[in-house]
Length: 343
Image (tube, rainbow, N blue to C red):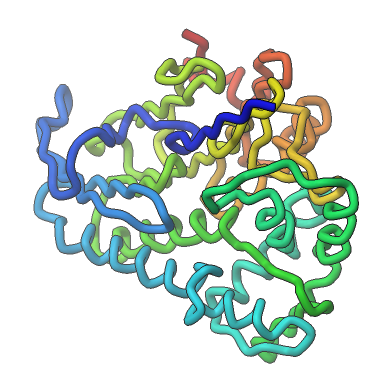
């Protein structure tokens, strides 16, 4: 059967960021309002492009924020043998000491398991490797292969000793992959660097996930564009936001086509196969780490269950595009003045 590989720019391309261009510093006039100039520091971290926007004069703080992203990448990259996550995977079956960053991320995932129904699962590493996502050769595995990999998957198999700073993967051969939350956690930390250094407005964007604060140029809400999952380059709509985090999970980020069917990297830990209930889930909330987790879980839940979860979470809103292309929006986004609209 014919196979085509899709490796597209991450979901939720954000109109506020203007990612086109070379790495470096880019200046533009902020337009109506205060007339201030903003600076964009560009870089690469977490295996994707980075843009950090701050008022002119705060370039050192932006570079420190980028350095923080790079530092955290070295901790969380499971493909780097020197990383803490790689050490946990290599020591599967035994207790492994970890630093505060890895423990914070794993504790957050564990604490949110009741909300996500366990659908956000960091132990899907064996499934990702089996399908070939992250490598050059993606394929559809057979039922027997999936069954063997699923024996190594399950949040219940990750044991945390929070007081002692230790992690244990219950079975040898287990592989945790924190990619679905570590990027959001790193963005939150980078944004904290900016605020701690006196930056009064700005944003940190890494591969489509974003934290923004203080308003656009300090006196207008940010306009965050959500990319259409089936019409690349077109905006599904825009979210108007003064401050907060936005993350998107979609079946158009990393995928391949075989036999006319789309196989993407958001794998359901119950089946070991790509989720089929949605095309996209975008979540807005106070923390990128949290909305990262929720966007993945809501994508796998689908629109009915996903919207029910959203309505029960104070301060969290979202958009789900179902498998047929229908757009569902949580009440908090619908009811605000001009919060979200379809083009």
